[in-house]
Length: 267
Image (tube, rainbow, N blue to C red; front, side):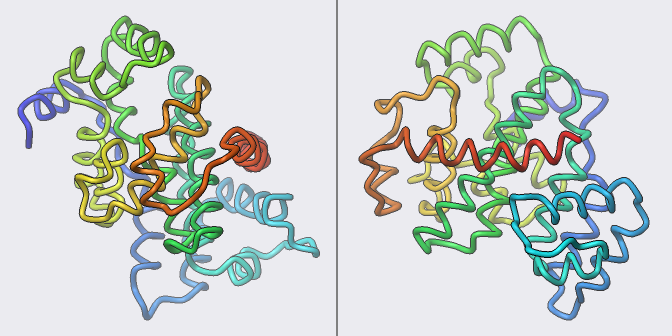
């Protein structure tokens, strides 16, 4: 591991741990012999999570015609991977509970929704996996946000003015959220797809999976509060084979769709 990342992690006493329910859910989905019932069983042990999952399934985001009151029925309608996405998003929300992580939480959900939408539209990867890589892409910021508040404020100021966030973080911390996030992903034993997209979502062509990383890059840029057309790297847009004649319209569509999910997760 890079010395700057190692030093950063070693100096922290409260490195986030992946919630047990998320670990179990990921393992169940990974096992080809597992069943929806097994996924339902792990949720049922957590009453608050059960309520959250049912609320989400019955929300306008998924748009099922009938009211669903059974976890097993809800998961069966969603399918294994969509169910996993709900569990991960709901179970990880407490990690983003501090005030300085609130913006990170909203950005994670919005990017997840955008990646899911574009992956489905462009048919470039499984849309459920796209949701997860979008949700996890900035997870390294959880670590950086535990650092010097003055540095974080300065980095935010620089990026709002159009500076590259990776360069700014490297200058202040000797590393950046993409590198730190990839190490955290390995620590959590997340799938290689997640680790790779976390590490390379700012430089997709350095990755062995440039399409997936470019998807995260494009959506990440589109939904930034200070978005401007010129901030998009056209080389990465071309990898997706998409014409972005009206990026601001796409941006608004993603943000509006994500707001439905954010409203449900905030209750």
